[in-house]
Image 1 (cartoon, rainbow over the protein chains, first blue to last red):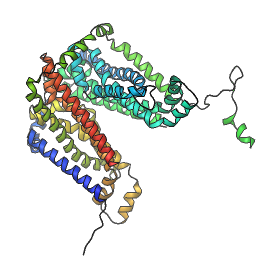
Image 2 (image 1 turned 60 degrees about the vertical axis):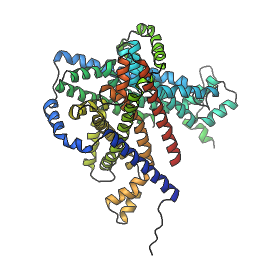
Image 3 (image 1 turned 135 degrees about the vertical axis):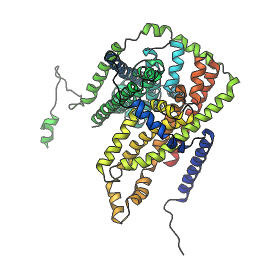
Image 4 (image 1 turned 180 degrees about the vertical axis):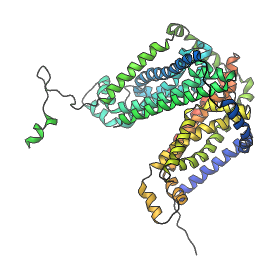
Length: 266
Length: 276
């Protein structure tokens, strides 16, 4: 008689089975609804390669007079991402003080601030951009505001969680000796949470670089707008070199931020 | 006894007025330097961008008007909104699941401690770093050229970026598994695949679930956005109705996006609690 000892507990196994069934149901429902067939991709891959070979390779440089313009729009994208992340971080710091229940002087408002941030965060940046375009007009400024809103909401949550993780004991002892709220912030929260805040800030810059490219596409200025205009006018060779440029930009920023993060965590 | 007090690290420091200084002697220099650099960069980009702030501020009340208009929900197009919402959801689910499978496979190849081919892992990592660096929207635009408009392009385009993301994060969590565990299994004569299935996968399962949850949320947002470039789904409804001044429909679509995004977030918070 063969009797095997189960490797994981029965309850755990049931949870995993339930998960698996849920996922299969979702998968089947999605496939039926969209009629997506991965074989279609394989079947159309010839088309894809032809497109890549004829329309994309080799990447062609745009006219010399345009290159200056393109480099400037890259700078616009990068600066937009950095500035919006910085402004959002400063605002988010003050708001997040009121968003975590253990820190805030008014614990009752914590839920309210969090709810507000959740509302802002769960609407994607591009939808914000569309809402803002219809009220503020098109331009770099509007793209900046749209990025600011989403990164602000994201950082309020991240900062509040950082504060809750770290500083409960420290804050309690500070409170016991009779410090005021601003003193508690400066001497208790800032020293212990600063590196956490900064690594979230760096993450936000990374996200914003990508997002500002996309927001640019629908009218926020920067490299996204340039790329979209080339794609729209079927100049794929030039579009490809701009895509490469975007990739280089993103990789460079990722490298810099990960280097800085390592420095911070030393 | 006295040696600790008189050692160079502990000597007493006095300020100019003769008071005892109480601030930390070995201050961390990184963070202040870092903050200064950020401040300089921010000011620099403020002047570089040259946004006309006055104009922007004067138009701010417009946002209120738009929101007011959007609050007047228009349910006459509810059918269209619901079908495109379903489409968005299924694109999200399918793209996440397909890239989960692909990501596990490529993550296995990209982790240096599973296949001991260093150059091969490096190569895979390089390829996926490039794929990840190009924003999703561009992939979707490219896929649309090959597959035509519609959800298939959305799924394929999202898959590229998501697979690249999963490959990197899964490879990282695979590599964080202690080498002793792998060695112990190998010593008992288990093959490479057996090691992967019995040691690597179970111990990184919770991380994989966390990454998948996070990516599912992002994909939903991305997916709501992709419609705006023409890949079907709710984004198309939103951009179309805002451009056609049909704010009631846009309002209800945005509300739905918000509700779904919020409930997905809650569900994954709950799942994470369950697993712990």
